[in-house]
Length: 221
Ligand SMILES: Cc1cc2nc3c(=O)[nH]c(=O)nc-3n(C[C@H](O)[C@H](O)[C@H](O)COP(=O)(O)O)c2cc1C
Image (tube, rainbow, N blue to C red; front, side, top):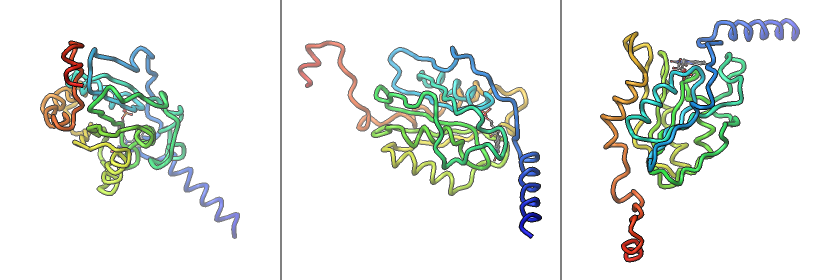
């Protein structure tokens, strides 16, 4: 009986929406002044999507530790509200800003939260359209338990490689494993300080710095 089946399917979907992990947690209203921060002469950029602010706090710590520029991405607005409205990590969603000029940077650090065992659609959508040619890339995420499957990690790395980037590292922070008083920003700073040498592009990969002296610059050109 199709109508009975349909009713059952609706009941199952409703139960999933009501009981899914991470359903309707607080969404952070971001002050526009906190969406972007720049450091004069920065050669690294940290880009983050964060629904409720935890990954953003971690990303700000990474940016401080690296002396990097910081850009927070916004999504369409309802993502992550429930199992029913959370876009699949494979779908393309609009991001704000839609694109970022990555030309000034050698190192691009991109991350977001884990949603249903995958990176969030917003962070993935940014990566799928980013021009990462010749960039060193570090991926990062925060989560609360389940983490990510190995296949997903491979696909995440492959997305970067398809865009021309070289993945230097993948950093995951399980918030449940941090001490209750731990500060995600301080954790980001600590990780950046211990790994920054490994993340920087090697001398052979890095583009030459323009010599500020025009005469010497002409000699080299
Ligand atoms: C829709 C949704 C799905 C989630 N799925 C998972 C999951 O599969 N595994 C996990 O460990 N945490 C999951 N979480 C928890 C988040 O990954 C975790 O709270 C994260 O730190 C939130 O980051 P944010 O505050 O930057 O948005 C989910 C959260 C939401 C909102």
